[in-house]
Image 1 (cartoon, rainbow, N blue to C red):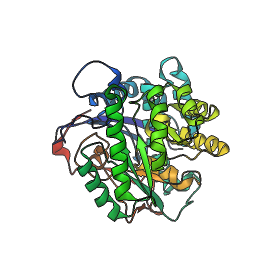
Image 2: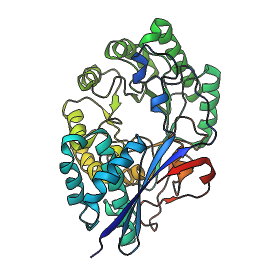
Image 3: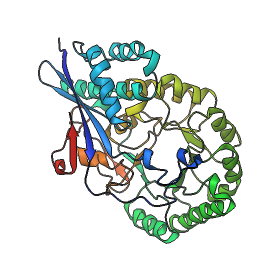
Image 4: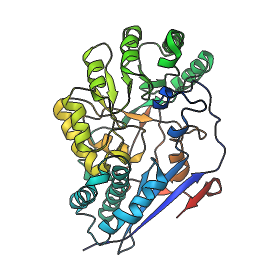
Amino acid sequence: MTKIKSIRTRVWNWKGPTVPPEGNFCTNASDALWDKGDAMASFRFHQWLTVEVETDDGTIGIGNAALAPTVVKKAIDDWYAPMVIGEDPFDYAYIWDKMYRRSHAWGRKGIGMTAISAIDLAIWDLMGKLTNKPVFKLLGGRTKEKIPTYYSKLYAGSVESMQAEAEEAMKHGYQGFKTRFGFGPKDGMKGMRENLKRVEALREVLGYDVDLMLECYMGWNLDYAKRMLPKLAKYEPRWLEEPVIADDVNGYAELNAMGIIPISGGEHEFSIMGCQQLLEKKAVSVLQYDTNRVGGITAAQKINAIAEAYQIPVIPHAGQMHNYHLTMANVNCPIAEYFPVHDIEVGNELFYYIFEGDPDAVDGYIDLDDNTPGLGITISDKHLHNFDIVE
């Protein structure tokens, strides 16, 4: 019987070049505060955590986390690793509940659930490697010939720069395009007009034969969102993403009940029960958990089943291999978010600099290899000079 013998955690601190922050780049939850400066600072991910779970035969499974890596590393090293070492990785359901229940007083959301997620991802990668199967084959197999993707960038900038970016992206066959709003409640009516101007400008380039998704990243509030929804409706957005802070579930439900634009969210929700509450309250029309924070693949697959029963599509946040395997294995996951390879800006791009194996989109689609075991990623040594790595 295979046993887990060690867990190695490393924090990867990016020290390479970055795209400097710009004003009105993307609304976010910090916009409600009075202080000046880069409101996006706490939402930039210029660190990443890797977790390597090794079994007694030398097989290594790889997991990862993007939220608060230094704190998550401490939680794994001091709390979760001792719970997991010595266990059979194929007892993944037991291991998950062991981590969840023994840290329940403090770990059921946030840092604790992110740590659980990272270990769970590594365990699924491990199981795939030990059985010589890709993870999606362990989850039910291929439900799509290829996975359609939507282009996820188009941060707020000048109208001209956003149109140029959209025009270039259109050449690559994406099934949809997501943009970010740069203005929120603090910017008043003038900011509303600036938001609308950019959505209209993107539709001029994209036309109406592809989806356009609109993201607020928790930077609006209920009142502002209720005023904006009717103004945005004529542009036929596929969804309005995270219009209010994650804890305002009633706000999500009220906006979704208006029936003007489908509301999406869940990126900042944690656990099976957290997502179930969003569905039960009819708070979202599209669920967007992120597997490396919601509880890993073990939790995500249960959430997928609940969402399918509600007939709410699941489109995980941020692309990346742990999400792609779930999308491939579930009919109720119709499309994948895709961040193009880019210089380090917000930080989602770090995934491409730390790992190898993430598929490139070709003509708007990605595919997963039937013969590559596990998640299909390895830790790269190509960009080590751009990182300070803390063991």
